[in-house]
Structure formats: C-alpha cells, structure tokens
Image 1 (cartoon, rainbow, N blue to C red):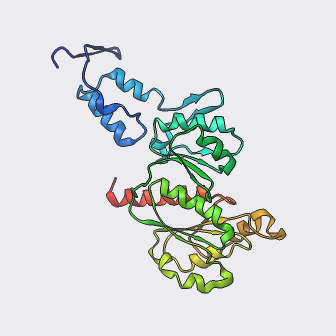
Image 2 (image 1 turned 90 degrees about the horizontal axis):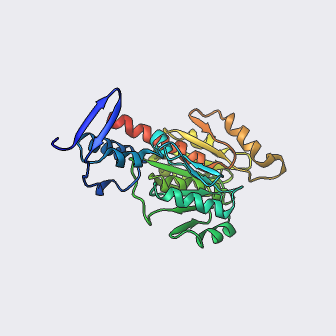
Image 3 (image 1 turned 90 degrees about the vertical axis):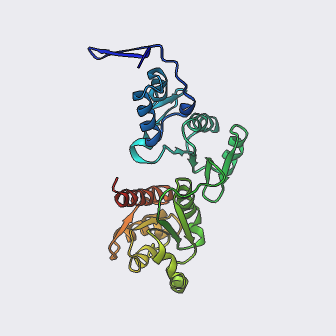
Length: 287
C-alpha cells in the first residue's frame, strides 16, 4: 500500500497519509448498496476511514432541536425510511425535520397535512409537493420509477373513502411501487366491481378501502388469488361508530387471505403491501 499504512494493535486503528478522492461518497449512507460500496472502498483504500466515519456517525438517529430524533437507520433495517406524522407538530417542526431528512433521503414524506399547514410549509421548504386528496406533503422527484416487479391494486368502496385510499396509493407510489386504482365499486352496486374484474386479476396484492358496513374486502377476497389488505374507514352513519363497525366486519371476514389494518390507516396498508412485494421480489431473486 506504499505510504498508506494501516496498523491494528489491540484493536486500535491508526491511519496515516490518506488523501484519496471521495467524490463518489458525498451522499449519506441510507441505502444498503451505498453502505456496501462505502465499506468496500474503505477496504480497497479508496476512501479514508474518517470520511466513512462521517457518513456513518448518524446511522442510528440524528437529533433535530430538542423535539425529534430522526431514525436514519430505518431504511436499512426495514426497506422504508421514516415518515413524518403531521398532526400534533407545528409547521416549523415539520419543516425542520423535512430539511434534515432530505439530506439523506431522495424522498421525504409527511402524512395528514391539512391545506393550511401545507401553505405554511411551502414558504419554508423548496420543491415541496402536495397531494391534496391524500393529505401528503413530499420532497420527491417529479416521477418515481417502480423499483419492484408486481403491482398494488387499490379499491375504494365509495367516493367518501378516497382520502384514505389515496393516502395508500400515494404512499405506495412514493415508495417505488406500481399502483392501479379502482374507485367507487362498493357492494351496493356490485356490477361496478365485476365489470372491472381485470384489476383484481392483475394485482399482486390488493388494498381494499371501505366504510359503512365494510363488506367489500370479503367480496374481493373471494375473487382474488393474492393477499388482500382491508382498510376500514370512519365513513358511515351513527352505528358505524367511527369505523368500528367495518373494522369488526373485516376482522370477521369469512373469506380467507384477508389482513386488516387500523381505521383510516391507508399509510399502514401501503407499507404492508410494499413489504409483501419486497419479500416476493427477494424470494424471486434468491437474495
């Protein structure tokens, strides 16, 4: 190695005269491929240990003021970066968190962002996008190519369920998954669903969003050969108890292969669907 000497004694590492270029390692390490490439470059002597340390020092979490700790390691552990829950946070707090996260992630999301909060945020954050129906703010490229094979079919029982369904759809698309939408196909007009049977048949995993009595996921699961993720919504009259009635219907489904997430949790449904596809892709490649 010439003048670049690496000495290890009693687990003490000393480095001398490393002046090699680091132009390929200006981005922080939040992706497994980047991390592996960085470690290989250190082993090959192309990157100094001090530079590697700088990239890895906040791998666990990074404080933001005294109100947040960003979990940069989550992408490596789970395949999905941390996402900001908007309610309960001030626009200033959300803006600070997003600005820190954008330095380490190509896509930064905040959910349940009301229009007035977005108005305050866009004055503080450059390049901020707003998906109004989904109530999601994001720093993201204009287009995101799907990173995984397969597609997520997302169905809504009624138009009133669209905010939850769109939260699932936008979350999935920003996470690198292909999505096909089918809206307003509830059981009160079952022919609408049956006339669009191709959406069910072509899906690798289905997310079915319904309020009222919540029957649609059971019907879809009886037609589908893939996992069905049921999402109860809080849409309905008094006896729906804010989504409790469809939640119980879905939990008691007689159709096999139905998993249920919490009331109005479109985000959680999208992440679960994504994990199913990521696992299928991993099994398919033998990784």
